[in-house]
Length: 143
Image (cartoon, rainbow, N blue to C red; front, side, top):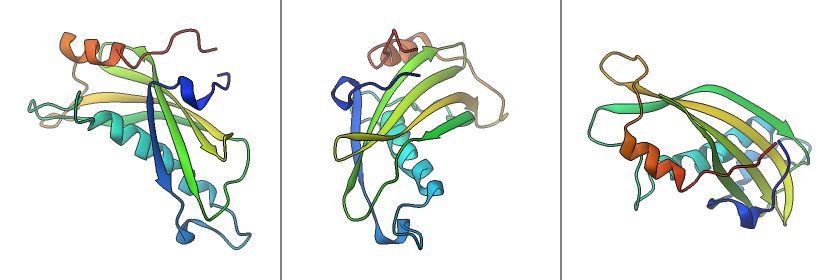
């Protein structure tokens, strides 16, 4: 997918870069990028105003996660995380995210999360109410 400016993401957050995130070369280890993307997803799922999880004993699991590393991230500092919904399926949600450091995109990710029933561990259809919440964060025209 194409890069978009941080300001254009409907969901924005940040994470502090920890010294422990770095490797011997002095930049953030590639595995830690996943943690930063997780921060963006978690803030979407647990958003105070429009939480995606209800008392229906459901949760979300990752079905697909693809990362493109564009630049290294250096300590100290913060990483800004932009998250957008790209697709709303029957039980799945497509997400597009980018990480930024000092106004430069350092990585992008495409993720599919699936709502599952906690009791059966099987996919569960998204409610119409949940789909309406997701529409607010949807960004069209991403290629």
